[in-house]
Every structure is written in C-alpha cells, then in structure tokens.
Length: 68
Image 1 (cartoon, rainbow, N blue to C red):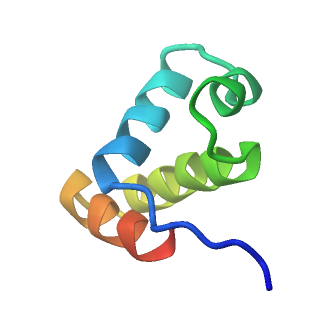
Image 2: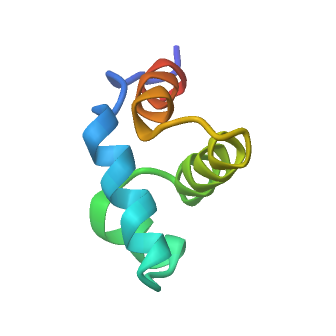
C-alpha cells in the first residue's frame, strides 16, 4: 500500500509560491522542504490561474489546501 501523508498546510504552499516568485528554483525547494517538484509547480500554476481569473489569495489558499 502506498504511503500517504497529510496535506501540506495552505500557508506552506503559499510560501513555496512566494519563494519561486522571488527566483528560487522549484527543484532546490523540493530538496530543501520535501514536497515534490511537481507539487510546487502545480501550486505556482494554480496561483497563476487564480490570479488570471481575478481571484484573491484567500481563494487560492482554500483550493491549494484541497488538492495538496
């Protein structure tokens, strides 16, 4: 049976997005903080999508928590 882990806190995902926006590489963040590179990229893409739709950060955080 595959190992599962609890979802990452929404604040954690928000911080990962902020670090990517500040110039950090998702690969380096994945090594340092343990979420997969793909998870970090998904969080950034989700933030881009919500921003393009004019949503606020609160909506992003709620959705982020649901998919993590």
